Image 1 (cartoon, one colour):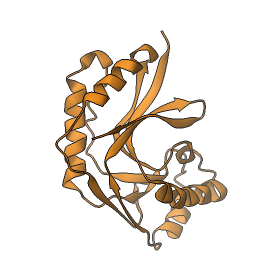
Image 2: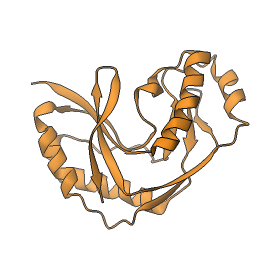
Image 3: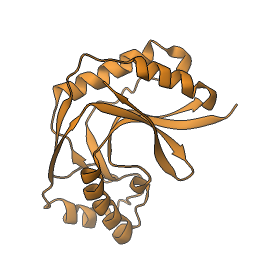
Image 4: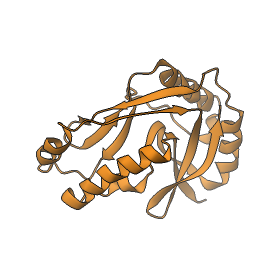
Length: 179
């Protein structure tokens, strides 16, 4: 059986993706950080999971049937922040609808155990990643000296989420679901 890596996220609109991409390119050029360039700008709802490729149609059917009672989301991005010295990101302003969407999606997926998607036990802190995993601890101070004082503001409405699949070295949107 062949397995495939997936994750589920709200993919940011093109204007946000382009702006965030500029920051990701800065991190690549200055510090050699490439991991974040593998994905479009997004807000993760379900972190990456390994699943049998043959179950993809079942997953798509399950996600198509997911119709949460959540209004389209007005999402706001503000400034920059970091998790320790390994991740730099753009925070998403707290949003009850987004938190509810994530919880409802996890509950919906838990009702389909044959897919094998486990609940993420980490606290949900919505963000759009600029650099992750390949930012060294020694480079972090210089990277944060760049991003810490910068301002960044963007807002957009979200009424869909996407299933992304690792294709070679990049994550590709394979299905988008509106609610």
